[in-house]
Image (cartoon, rainbow, N blue to C red; front, side):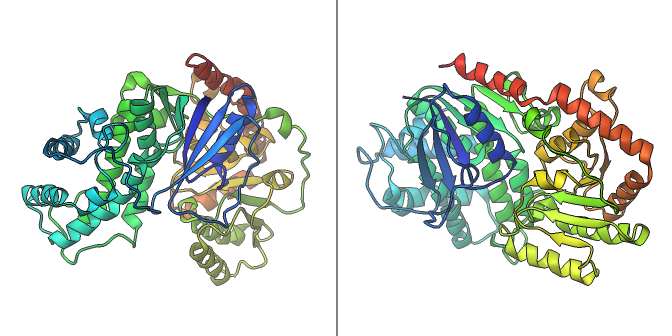
Length: 486
């Protein structure tokens, strides 16, 4: 039997990034733990390639696709009236935030008493009657046709998770809520074993940000009076769905882990029981960064280390570069990270850089090894709209590079400290507000011109990372957690 089955949505081992780096650290360090991985993706992709080499202790890798369907009938019996009544009862409870018969709900789709297959859920008269019941009960001001197709679009992926094959394991560990968190709740209920949940960023918050800006979600011509958070009805529907998935994961998890205190507070606000939530921050391999030799270049070197995607708000960095150059004409800027994840956004960023006449001052490097840039950068900048606990702060600080970072996620805690002992070390960077090129530029200029401030921040960052963010110390807490439950 697998010791620990990791439930991963859109990350390791096929997508690079902070969460994937953390997962790779985790499985690589625990050589005596037998791991399995369930990777959740929207579609199958035969051209997809792993970004990481799986350590030998990863014994299995299974993939679940949210939008790839087969019509295999896996139900063990024909659904009866009481089964549909249970389904309607579950939805009634879920709308009010209660999941009193969750295990019974799961058993409708899997196990020896399963009775709901793809054809029944999406083609039976009984389900149609349940939908019309909730449509009428809600007094909705949208057309039933729009309601019906949105229901189908949101529930097909959930059906895939409800019927997914889950390998036997002693511990199931999801690294987000959402579909992976739902799979963890299902595994705990139907497979036994413990369910641990680690959130780096708050999944629901990130999905709400995406939904508010999404263009693929249908928007009716007339805004519904029942739409919430300023969203149209269907955007609010998607948002509520992810809130419900998070609630299920929080309810079913045996322990909930997060990276910093601000995340813990937000998890509790989203419904996580406070007694379940514990903070274990990320760490880095200190010894590997001691090998980096710093070199000073004649002109200021300023870099953003990260993917060229909208959530990183690369455009604010580009605009701030233009403002800095008005004061420091010989500064050089780099956007060091993959450019192929949101290709349209990358093209927009290139066009903005050209419009601001930055061709000779700003370089999009594409995928690189960040260590090569830590050797000569004077400043690292993060302009993200959302972050969890970014590795780039730890990596830059340990080699003596101060940062300018937006006030999101753990950035303030990481740069200014959490405990009294931590804060007494002093700040290791400057915090700015999101989407604010002027403030970002002012912070960059201040650090470049104020040498005593720069040197104090460089020393504080190195001391802070060595004292509080040693990877070995932090991973040992996960090792202890696993060993207590194996």
